[in-house]
Length: 446
Image (tube, rainbow, N blue to C red):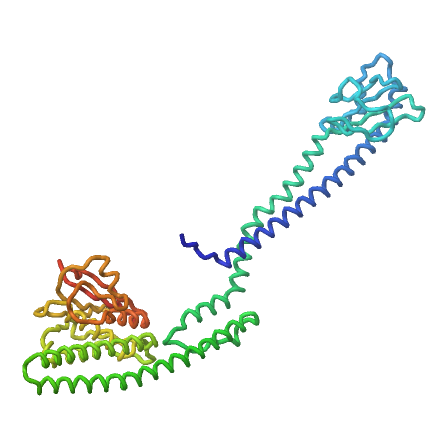
């Protein structure tokens, strides 16, 4: 199972957004803690102030009211008190409730008759006493009111987080994208480097952190340029050095065949001639492969590939062995203007046509069709299986055939076509036919 590469931008956005959200939650937690503490102090202060102001009114009312009056008949005391939040009880020295608010229970709270704050499971209570200590006042505040206020303050702090998360993602995406743009540009520049593009990277405009990478890549490109130039020089020298002795040996062998009488010696000489011819073709293919590996596909100047196609077909027509076997099908005004090396394209086309001539029926024609960006070379023959087609592009790989060959032609062609940004597809049967073989070159758009 192949793991998909992770995106640095996505990881940075996730990490930074998570960090911002985490810090915001920590800030909300601290804020809620501080608010709770301040609210508790505020509620306690209000509770104590209410009890201290209410106590003189209670004492004055108890001194002047009718003993037979209802303990809850202190309407003036109830005015100004919020029954939903604060309740109170007035007790005598024995702890008996002699007066209470509407919402307060008639039974005394379970707290001591002592000035100060006291807690029950449901209430926070402040107890106040008269000067002579005969009357006590309990003012109670329910804990649920405090929890509600704390919850509302926490929710108020959390609401901005809903807008903060998408806003922070957009802001971080913009900042990260802007910051990583030089890295993406450097990556794109490095991706264009191959045997046909060895131009050094522009490092002066890069950020300081990326300049060492660009310098290292430029040093590697310089070494690669030197190696490719040495390989190309070796190829050029080898082409001359190998062809001359092979051609000389082949000529001497042919002369020997002409001088020998028919018999075992002449037959042996014929086998030598065949071996030398095969050796010459193999040397030629190896030299073409070496040139293809050196990256000869592209060119700085645009050329018309139709002229190359017509020239190659003309060469085959002048050869008595292949005259008339290759047909060109294209529109009269067809043009293929591309930045492609002429020699490299000629190598590709010759290999594909030679492959069609050798492996197709000897009395059949080879058709070269040009239609826009697509060049098709078709020949007759039996249908190849998917497995056979998949292996034909490998070096020294040949199909089920008795025809001579090295198994390098298609590998060379695919290598060069890939260098010019095109694609080589092999089809069997040929498109629109019941049998045959088709080599299809798809060139990059002009």
